[in-house]
Amino acid sequence: MIRLEEGNQREELFEMWQEIFHDTIPYTQFYFDEVYGKNEILLEEDGEELRGMLHLNPYTMLMVDKEVDAHYIVGVSTKEDYRRQGIMRSLLDESFRMLRKKKEAFTYLMPADEAYYLPFSFRFGMVQYEQELEPGLVVHDEKGYTFTRAALVDPSEYVFIENEYKKGKFAMATKVDEDYLRRLDVEVKSEFGCFFYVKKEGKPMGRFVVYAEDDFLAISQMVCYEDACREEFLQQMLQFCDERYHFRQYRITYAEDWKENLLVSKQFGQIHIFQTRTHPIIMFRITDLESLAPYLKAKEEVSCILKVEDEQIADQAGYYRFVGDQNGMTIQKIAEEAPITADGSVSIDELTARIFGNLDQVDKGPKESFNEAAVSFWTNLSTLAPIEIPEIV
Image (cartoon, rainbow, N blue to C red; front, top):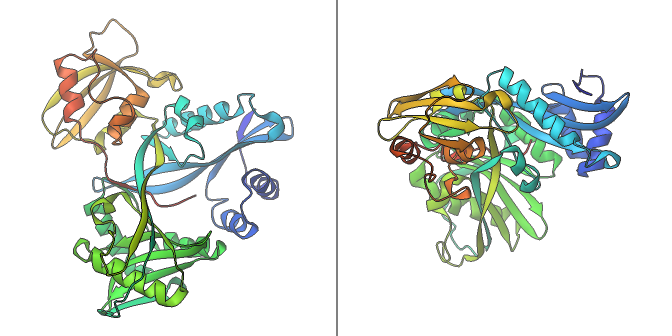
C-alpha cells in the first residue's frame, strides 16, 4: 500500500535514509532539519512494515519570465529485503499521478544510475562541465574583489540580482530567495565546506562553494552575474582559494551556460588543465503535456497533430494538436484514441528529450513516420536550454 507520510515518522525515515544512502550524520541531519516537513513523502508499506519511500521536494522554477511550481524527486529507495518486487515502480507511478493531478508539467531528478529511470520515460536535459586542474597562479591583482563567508552576509542583497540574471540567461532555472541561500549555507556546512559571496568594488558579483573532495579542492555552485567578467571572476576566485587553502589540485564544476568560458591551459600564466569532462546530470519527465505549452515556442509557425504514447501515465496518451510560433504555443488533447488522422506518432520520452534539449539521446532528427507538418514542428520546436538546477536535494 502507498500513502503520504503524515509528518510523524522522522526517526524511522532518518534511519532508513542512513541505511540506504550512507550519507554522513551531519548531512542527513541537515536534510531532516531543513527539508523534511516541507516536502511530500510517499511511503510503500506492508501492514506496519515500511518497505520503500520517495520524496517530492518543492521548488519554484523561472521559465520564460514565469514562475512554475515543480517537484524534485529524491530519496527513491527500497529496503534490501523487498527489492525487485515492483515497489520503486509503484512509488514512481503514484508520484506521476499526484503531480498530474496538480497539473505540474514535469518532474525531475538526479539519478544515481540512469538505467533505473530510462524505463519510466525520464531523459537527460541538463549537463554540467567539470575540470580538474593545478592552478599555479602568480596574479596578485585584486581588482577590488572581496570574498565573504555566507554567515556574515545578508543574502537579501543578492536575491533580486541573481533571479534577474537567471531570467536573462536560462530557459529554466531554480528561483532563489533568502531561505534558499540560507539553507544552502547550512547544507554546505554539513559537508564541512564553505559558502562565499563575491563583490567587486562593493557590488554583488556572484557566489561559490568550496569543500575538500578526495585530494582536490572542489568548487561548485558558482555564479557570476556579469558575463563579461567571467574570466576575471575565475582568476580572482582561484587566487583567493590558492592563498586561503593551499591545495595543489582543484576540481571545478560549471553550470551549462559556462560552456564558452571554461578554463584553458596557461590562461592565467601557469595553470595546467588535467582534463575536462561533460556530465549529464538532471533527468526530466513530462507529467502534464498540456500544462507545458506556456513555456514553449517555435522558431517558425507550426501546426500538427501527433499521437503521443505514454506507457506509465495512461491518461496522458492520446492525440494532441500542437500550434505555435515565436510568440508561444498551445497544446490541446483532442482525442484519446483513433479514428484521428495524425501527422505522426511520438513517445513521451522522445518528446521529453526533444523539449529539454537532448535530441541526440533519441535520434538525429524527425522520425521517419512524420509527414511534412510533423517534421516542421519537430525541427522548429525551441528547446528548453540552457538549464540551471544546481541543488542536490
